[in-house]
Image (cartoon, rainbow, N blue to C red; front, side, top):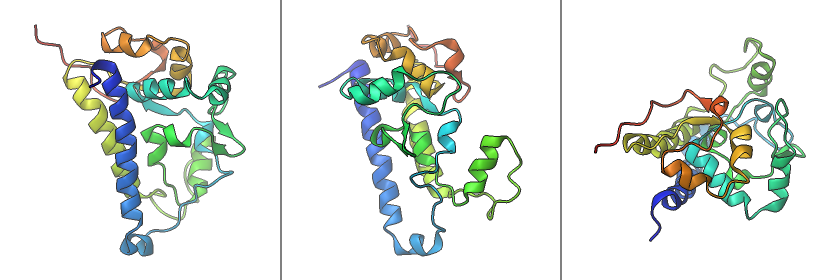
Length: 205
């Protein structure tokens, strides 16, 4: 049985899959389908991918482990530079859709003008709905994100939100990143940390 950081990274994969199954089950319900406006999210619409993408530290490490087996996508990340869109946006679609973070999965907008306005830093004045996103996927995926990170934090492991691209790039060539993180030494640059969660609890001696 895996323990330590390896077990946590496996738990990230399981969390992604469980949250997807829950949302898929919801979407299969006729009552939900009939009452839900169709999503504006589709191939060719990458407004959210042109903004800062966030992920929990454990998710970043799980993605790094997965990308070690995916050289094409790993090269996409290596060529990424600050100020560019997400490295994995290719031909209007996500090249790592199966291992994208929970924050990405939670986005389910019904009016593309909301995403365009947010990208441009403008008021969301023309959107058809307020809010212009579906609550259900946001609740499912952001709930899964807290369920993943907060137990680790309570046990004394720092699991902050991170800006995905620079954080992932920082650990891609560090095979010891996950074990370093598990032992309490962050492998992530300080400037990548987002203020999402509380600081970890102090471990009892």
